[in-house]
Image: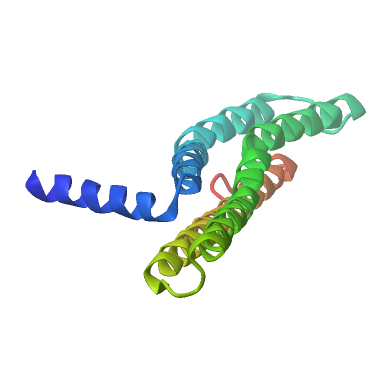
Length: 182
């Protein structure tokens, strides 16, 4: 238990060394990972059940060739696509915000450096170093958060496309002998 408190203290020191912008980055990072976990849960746990129900409904249809049946099939595919795309645009927007917040931290840190230079001159390197640290840490944190989020987002997006394609292939297969297309 002491190790956990020490680690939380280290995180708090890191956030304090980067300034208030790091608190915003930390909050948005929690939101990002909550949405990533939600999308993973949907793609891996909930969507396979939805896919089976749509496929079973298509198999149980007697009419699969008429214009009406094809429109029903297209509607089911469009609904599946909407469910698969849910929160993906918000995830993408969050990922794009991290570098911008890092840049905001950089600018605010550099303003602090210029204030120190204006008041004390360049003779006190310790004061200059704290401002430079305040400028670079949010940039690093924003880029790390964006890169990790971008990696997971691209994996989620490719998995979403594969799931939608598999569903379309299952519904297009007239004899439906391939129930689990990978």
